Length: 358
Image (cartoon, rainbow, N blue to C red; front, side, top):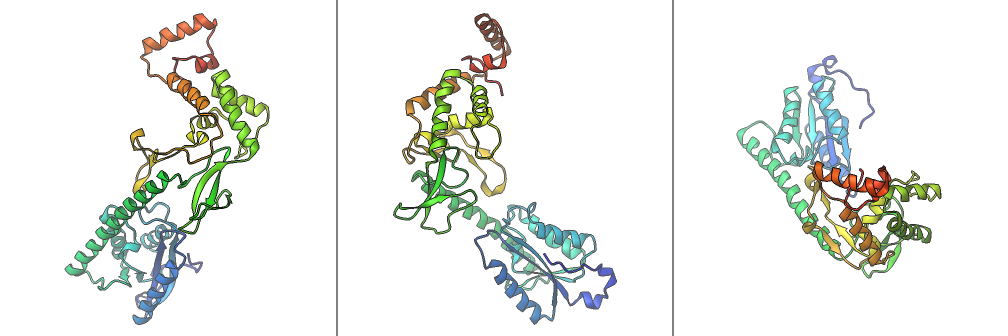
C-alpha cells in the first residue's frame, strides 16, 4: 500500500480530483510472481491514455478472491472511500474479477457501488467495454461476475480431483507430517531430494512429497507411546510421563493428552496416509467428511509401529468411546466404583465401557 499522505478530498478542487486516480491490484497466490506487475502495466497504460495521474495503490498479494476478510488492501480502499478520505476521483482495476471471485455475484457489484456512491468512477482497464452505466455494460459486468464465481468452482473441482489422484498414489498434499515423521521431497523418478524443513514446500510440478520416518529419537518415542498406552490405558498418564522424562515436543510445549491421542490414532505410523478427512472447499466452511469419503493410501510409508499394536490400541479407544444414557452411565460408574473402591479421572479414563473424559 502506498505510504503517501492521504489528503481529504474536500480540500481538493473537483477539477484536480477528476485527474487523480488510485489503482487496486490483486493476485491470488504467491506463485503468481508477475501478476501484480502485469496488472499495473495495463493500468498505467490506461491512465496515460486518459490523462489520469496515479496517486495511490491498494494491493492484496497472495490473497484469494473468494473472501474479503483477509484482503487488507481492498478493505483499506473501501474505508478511505466511505470515510471521505479518498483524494482521487477514479479507481482503476485490471478487470471485473479483481474485485473478487465471490460465490455471490452481488458482493462484487456491491463494492463497485460503494465507490460510485461516493462519487468515484470505476474503470476496468483490460475489459473490452467502457464502464459507462449503460444497460449493455451492466449485463456484461454481471455475466463477468458470474463467470468469475464459476471459474473458482470449476478450478476447485479440478484441484480436488488432482489432489485425490495424488493422495491415492501416497503423496502428502499439505499440512504437517506428524511427530516422528518428516516430509521428504522426491522427483518424478522417486529419487529423494532431501527433507523439507518447517515452512518449506515444493516448487516444481514434477516433484512430490512423501512421508518418511523422522529422527531415531522421535521414532523410539512414538513406539514407547504405543506400548506404554497399552499398559496404562490413559493418554493423560502417558503425557505426564513424557513430561517427567523431559521428552521434547516439536513445538516446545509440554505434552498433553490431546497430543498423545493424535499420535495413537495416526495411521501414518503403520504406513497408511489418509486424505479428505476434512474439506474446506471454496473457503466457505470446514466440513468433516464421513469415513466412506476418506482416501486411504496403504503401505506408502515405512511403518514404525507394529500393525497388531496399533490395532489393539485403537480397538481399546473405540470400545471406550460409547454413547450412554444417564441411567446406563450411572450403572457403569457404580460397577467401576465397586471394583476399584473409588472413582477418579484416571480410573474413568482407563475403564472399558466408560466414556473417556474430554
